[in-house]
Amino acid sequence: MDFALFPEFAYSGSDPVSCKGKGVARGLEIVSADEVQKQFGRYFDEATLHPVGVTKNGDLRFVMVPIGGYQRLRRGERVAGGTEDLGDEMIEAIRKVEPSAKSLEQRDD
Image 1 (spheres, helix red, strand yellow):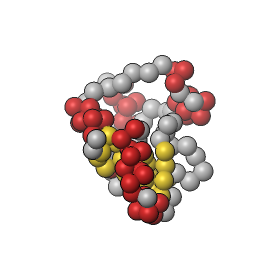
Image 2: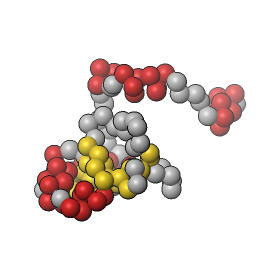
Image 3: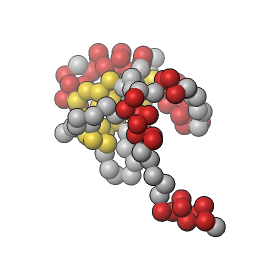
Image 4: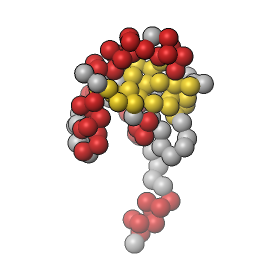
């Protein structure tokens, strides 16, 4: 099975996602680029089973995913899950989300 390096899901725009001191995504194994370079075969195999996040200087830069997962993402397929699949940290983060100014403007129109 092949895999894809999928940078557009690791960060938005040019701002990398910081992995320092917090969980980025539940179930996402995160390793440094140096570690991937040293043990590429291992992480190649891991990426065929589940996404592997690759960091540089503590910032998530890429996510290695199986090619089938990449193709589903490219087609825009969505996988639904229940709130029971979310960790307490994620639920709390969702509770704290505030709408953007642009969103509020559109709501008033």
